[in-house]
Structures are given as structure tokens and as C-alpha cells.
Length: 82
Image 1 (cartoon, rainbow, N blue to C red):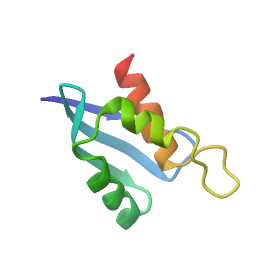
Image 2: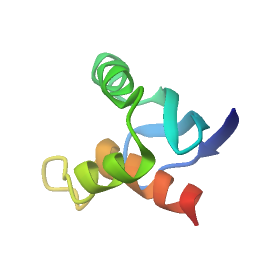
Image 3: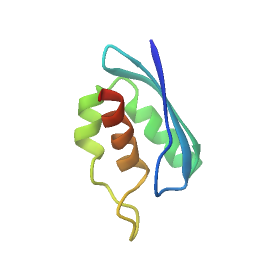
Image 4: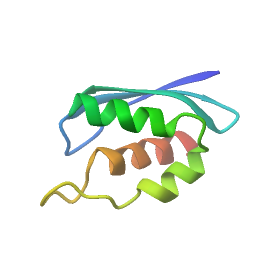
């Protein structure tokens, strides 16, 4: 199992922590941001493939911001994938 951390940009969250095994997200934790929403997103990410999550969350916005925590999760996973 591989641990991966990412610092999101343009959102309230300060850090995302992932555990990924064979391209499948085993766990997700966000530091900062909307606690309940991000815990819920973490539950939905568990067991999903990195590619599926990127496809699903890329481009989601928050209010008038050009990004969101879900979009930044996609950015984190794109960076992880290289």
C-alpha cells in the first residue's frame, strides 16, 4: 500500500492524504475544509479506481471559484499518476 499526500490549491482544505493500492483508493483524509462533506467524499472514494475518480471529479467547482475540493482531489490523483 502506498501513502500519498497532496497540498490542494484555491480551496479551504490544507492537505489530502491517500492510501492507494494497485490503482485503487483504500483511504482518503482531508486536513481542513468542510469536515463532514470531505469525510463523506472519503467514504465514496474508498474502493474506486484512481482513473474513475479523476474522470468523475475533474471540473467540479465551488461557488464562484474555478476549482473545489473534489476538483483538487482529481488534481491530486493526476499528480500521483504522473
